[in-house]
Structure formats: structure tokens, C-alpha cells
Amino acid sequence: MSHNVVVADIVGAERFTAEWWRDTMLGVPLRLLALILIALIVRYILHKLIKRLVARTVDRPPPREVLGSTQAARIVFGSTGAYSERRALRAQTMGSVLRSIVTITIGAIVIVMALDILGYSIGPVLASAGIAGVALGFGAQNLVKDFLAGASMLLEDQYGVGDVVDMGEASGVVEAVSLRVTRLRSIDGTVWYVRNGEVMRLGNSSQDWARAVIDVAVAYESDTAQVRRLLEQVAVELSTEDTWSDLILEEPEVWGVEQLDVDRIIIRLVVKTRPLEQWKVARELRERIKRRFDLEGIEIPLPQRSLWIRQEGPADAAAPTPPAEPTADTPDEQERKASRPPEREVGSP
Image 1 (cartoon, one colour):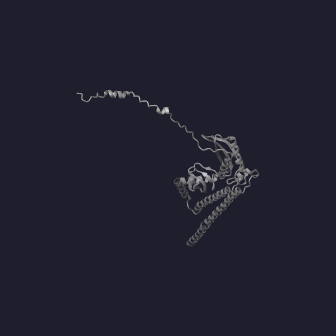
Image 2 (spheres, one colour):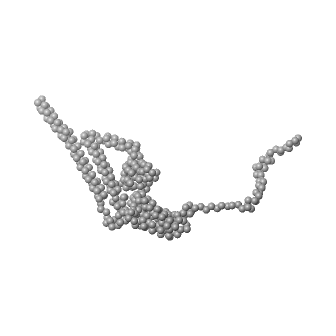
């Protein structure tokens, strides 16, 4: 009887050892290894798809109608066009961000599943993570808002490095863009750090094309038809020169009389240019317009005011000043005088 018991104990111990070896020493590591391999394969496939999508976006061929049109090609291939270098860099940046998000997500899933394989209860872990996420969300609302706004700006390509933007309180050239803040440098060299979540409105002067708007003031005696003809000649001459033809996208236009001011007539000239070149073109046009107006004798007026000076004549100076007429007492004054006691003469009893 005792011999059978010993044999049964030995067989049970061997069976326990085999099951423990299979489940603990082989099962758990093999399952962990399989989980890691599957995660790496999924990560590789997703990264490959993201890289292929970015490459297709960057290297896609332009349409034939764009290649056949010089004006359209200037806009499409410009600094912010659909086939520009900045758009290519933006696509690569977004691809890098997406790859990082994929890696972090897969890593978090692998950690949770690995804890489950090791025998830990993942319910409390998930509950704790949920509570921590809610607390972090309430405590860092502004930070989350900034990150979401920054991601939206990058996805929508609202602006990029090198653009000239106006964000309300701050304006200037964009030097750096991140998910949380945007760094601007104003014209006087001041560096502005703007939180992405605080941007309520945004004006970008660098997307696709720009326009140089020049308001020219002339005197009321000037012939507006002649002024319009001279402005058009100066602008067209500038647009045909080799140095400026690449900066000007379309033929300049004179829109005509924009405003009748107190002492001048304002005539507007507009020129469509490449992004960030409108100010350079406008300065050159103003200089040439000034020289041309000087040759043609057209006056650019200064503010004028008419003064009327009145001088008194001899008759007005010799006339005597009439005496002031006594004014009648008001009812209140009459009542006050009536209630006052009579004055007595000096020396009277």
C-alpha cells in the first residue's frame, strides 16, 4: 500500500513538473514572444503604408494642364503650391508624427496584453489608467487644447515655417511650429511665442499667391485718364523685365478711382505676385511711379487747408461800445428784496 502511494506521489510530481514547465516556462514566454513578433509585424506594415502614402504625396506628377500654363505653374509650384518643397516637408513631418503615434499605440497594447499573459489582473490597471487620464485631462486642459489645435493646424496646413502670418496680438515670420506653440519673429526682431490653442484667427500672407495694392494720390486738377494710363504703362514695363517677370504672376490692373478725399484723388493699382514678394514689387512700383510723375508734371498733393482771415475796418474800430442794458430782476430776487428790512440813513433817529 505504501509502495503504491509513493509511486502515485512520484507520478503526480512528474506530472506537475511537466505542466509547470509547459505552462510557465514554455507557455508564457512563447506567448510573450508571439505577442512581440505580431506587434513588430503590425508596426512594420503600418509604417510601410505611411511611408508609401507620404512618398506618393511628395512624388506625385503634376497634371498636364499645369505644365502647359506658365501662370498656373508659378502658383502650383510656388513656395506654398501643391507641388512645393514646403508641402513635401509638411507631408514628411506628418508621416513622422503618424509613425510615432502608431508605435506608441502598439506599445501600450502590447504592455497591457503582456500583463494579462503574466497572470496580472488588467481590470484595475485599466481603471487606474482611466482615472489618471480623466484627472490629467481636467488638470491639463490648456495643454490638451494646445496639442489638438497644433495637430489641426498641421493637418490643414494653415501655415508653415517661413510664412508671414498675423495672429492678432502677434505678427511676423514663422520660425518654428510645434504641436504646442508657434514661434514668430516680428519686423523689429521681437520673438513671439504663441500657444496654438489661443489662436482665434489667423491671417497668412504667404499661401499660393499675393497681391501688391498701391494707392496713388493725385491732385484734383490732374487728368484721371492720363494718370491711369501712366500707371498701367509703368506696371506693364516692370512685369516684362527679366528680374521682375518671375515675381509677377498676372498682368497688372488699374482698378480706377478708389476714393475722393478732401484734397486728393486716390487711384488704385494692383499686381498679383508670388507669395512674400508683394512688398518688394510694391516698393519698386512706387519709386518708378514717382519718377514718371515728375517727368509728366503730375502733382502728388500735400494736405491742403483753406484759411479765411477777417480784418476789421476803420468804421468798425471807431464805433463806441453800447452800454449794457440793465437786466430785470427775477421773481426770486424781487421776493428777496421785499423781505429785506429797509435801510436807514446815517444820522436819522
